[in-house]
Image 1 (tube, rainbow, N blue to C red):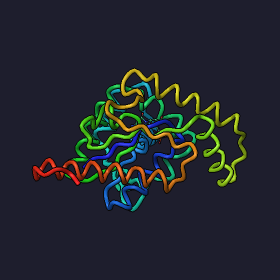
Image 2 (cartoon, helix red, strand yellow):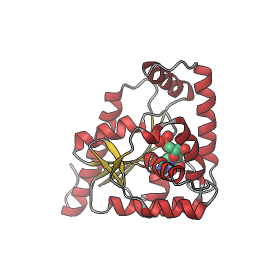
Image 3 (cartoon, helix red, strand yellow):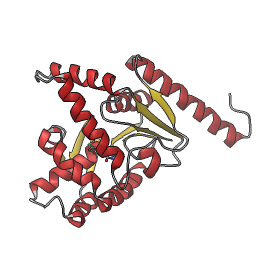
Length: 228
Ligand code: DC
């Protein structure tokens, strides 16, 4: 079974997807980390970020794995290296390049073949897995997302203001929504979950309920009996 979680930055997708996969004993695919990995390799190889064909070749050619809650590229743990501000910035043109998105779609579908998966990103339910058994658009108001991000940043000892976070978030949202290919949107048939005022546990609980419902339905279809 495939569950897709899409939504804007700061909606809590990563924490939610990781915890959901852990509870279910499923795999977790962080597709933002995949775009970040391509950017990291491109920077290290000195590739011009406007060279879309070269970027797509990296996307198709590097081995990205998710193991032990870490991200590995060609056998190297890059979990921290892909989260620097430099790589966050470099990931933007990488994710905007249509040939990169096309290559990534193929890679992501191959990685998902035959496994139970929670996959998160911007286009997982709309473009990559439109037939997923459960598609969720996870979001929260801009203020709520910024407040959560502010708390995380302060815990990391970074001195930023709510206004700075809101401005950066707005710019990322605009970039995600207005991308020519693979723009972020609510997938057809998706459940929309607005998490303002919900605890992490409540969000997980809701998703588990939806998964149980879908599984029951699938079981009913395969046995010919009505789902419980
Ligand atoms: O979720 P994140 O911040 O790690 O994502 C990194 C970048 O990749 C961000 O610019 C959005 C982009 N992205 C994308 O275009 N499509 C996805 N499926 C996932 C992320």
